[in-house]
Length: 474
Ligand code: SF4
Image (cartoon, rainbow, N blue to C red; front, side):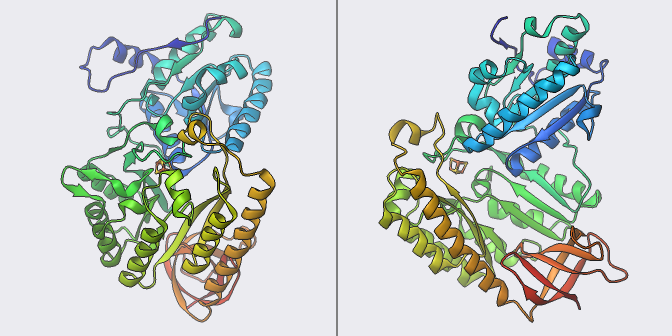
């Protein structure tokens, strides 16, 4: 078996009559039932919706259960080692299924496909399709061709897998309508790729260079989402606030989206501290529908570690930014990401992170131990030399600290009335609803007549935990 087949990328700008387009049209005559399984971040969820859009536009059908599928696409994450391990284990399970269902097509898409390339095909030779984030337009053509192999009874071991991994700086999928699940919150990708090159991160290598979608198109997309019944839109990008479209910046986009009639809330993730401009802060402070919540990844409270991470800001600059945000938006909720045990992190450097967290008092935090990723700049330049036991101990310390801070912040809201967008029934009690506050805190409260999912209600907070506000509608 040949190791891989590189096939040409379908070009959206090519005129009708292009043989590649003809091949896509041909694909429509073979409807495939595709089950998409998504791992990783919200950007991947959004990409799965995009893949569903591409497949549906080309006559294929996405199905909600694996049992109903003749194609399974595993949309993967490469950000941490355990995310990759999870996918490899899942592929082993899918291979068992393939033994019972030999015509099942297994595809691996997303960041891990881009990151592991040949290694993935060596480890999982039964995979039929490997496709990176910039190649999804080729899915229909790839499925069609693989299906032809199935129909001609070419044995699995003799069939060449498809590999589409070229990064394409011009690919923004602006013309593709994603297929979203119904709900109250829609995720809208406004920018793809990243130019920052943090030394611990694989994203720039697997998602390519940064590119923004046109502002006018995004506003139209949001209008359509409101027409479809969505109440909240979350703008997505790897460094969402470095958004640029001609002269417009991220603040301009926030204002424009915030003005869309009928939209209750706008959120965004993840911003980069170095791109937190006055224009962004002004829009957050002034636009009624832009939520007063900022997820502002710190990663480390030590300037030396930040330098090694190539985060492009110092601990002092970050502190100043938080002060400015709190001055302009006094009720802002700030959350963050922290990595402990990065290459060379000393006890003192770790304590700077601990102290920074204690001083800033984040509403909540995602906290991780550093996990080395092959192909990153840190992997090439530094030693992953903090022992695992030390990483674990440091992580334990900041988790404890953050739990106490989150619990105290929530306790302070007892007696306050908060506005909650109802998202669904409480999982533990069907007589209750759960929803989110403007600051992205979960609130749980008993249902009252004449309220439904998607409504905004006022809830008086009676009790709290570190993660939840509990109360009654008023
Ligand atoms: S800003 Fe840094 S951490 Fe975020 S995606 Fe880009 S390189 Fe990765």
